[in-house]
Length: 204
Image (cartoon, rainbow, N blue to C red; front, side, top):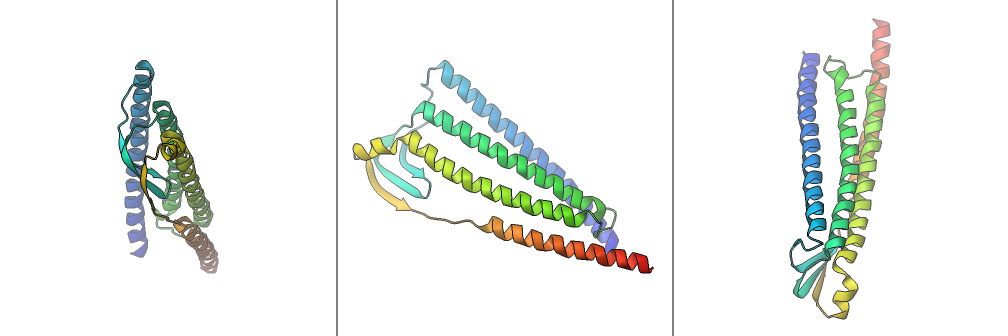
């Protein structure tokens, strides 16, 4: 009974993950296509494509309220968009790899065998994948801050006294480390479960 319940749940999760991976990939392709069209239009119009005016600028944890509206440099904004897209693609690649690992973990469970010899190793791989995702996200945050400094040319805003006020909003996200250690612990638990299962099978 318990094995059947595990098998049904694993099959449902596997199907959901397959759908989620498809949605992620389609979304990535659509975003890349939109950015490609925007780039072509920007080149054809010689950088005259409007990207909007801003009365406040977010640079990392700081928000700069401006005395008036400022339009970002088109070329710098385009470079920023491509760099962030490349970083997003890197995260998507690791997420898809993580989904693939989870599906490999679920594969023996769909047969009612949660303590298959491969499960512990795959959970360990998933732990390191989550760690890589967290590191990339933090690198993205730093890269975004540096790029926004270029896009809005903070030095020029300071020299022209266009900054009205500055608000700080510092956030430290170390959740990926917690996920990493929890998954690492789970990998050891499942490895131990595999050994107990093996001993039980040998006894029988």
